[in-house]
Image (cartoon, rainbow, N blue to C red):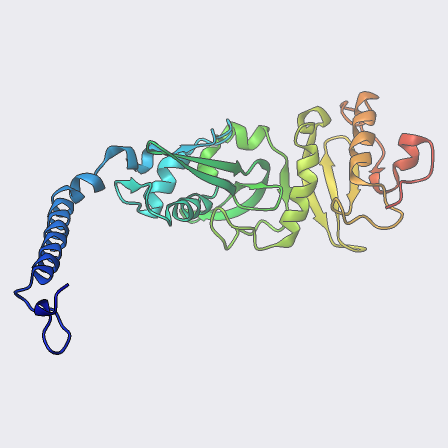
Length: 295
């Protein structure tokens, strides 16, 4: 660069060739930026609306509900959560939003995972609650006191009663009799009485054999310490403590079930003749020929 291209201060003169080249570069860069901005403004809406990133909430794929669920888990969850009409896979919060949507459904015990796939697809792995018993309650209808049944799972969680027909509620599941009080919680929440959960844990072991054993209901007894009994048309069956809470000398829950099945096979419980009371708390000897099973 010649000295003629510089001012006395050492800066380039605006009329110098080097300065003109610099200004030309600046102009080219500015023009490029303007073109990019104009292009983005033109195509941004088209990019945002690309179908491979968008899907309707009703197109979410969930674990197939088991036969005992009559509710539409997908539709119910979407409506309750008020999700937008279109979900965008590029939303970084999308998986957590969808997980929260299904966690709120009373039939869903747990959302194990939410997976986004391209093009637009969302897979949700759900674990559903399983009904194990019907709790007997009283309610007032048109001035008359009536009895009804409310379904629960093994943890004492209230399930949607509308998913069960009268025949299913009456004949398929064990009944629990506590105090006939209706729960103060909604479906999807645990019954506000620990005794319901304890009785439900017993019912979960018996639900597959209930008809075979010709049992009527599980009842709580408070005399001599809280314990549970099984009502039968032919005998009184003392179950004892809830599973996992057995006393030191008490037979464990699985052994109690085996004793009942053995007795049923011998027609000691399931026939129509009255039988002596059966105390399952000390029934280990009857099953194994040894002392009671210790915890």
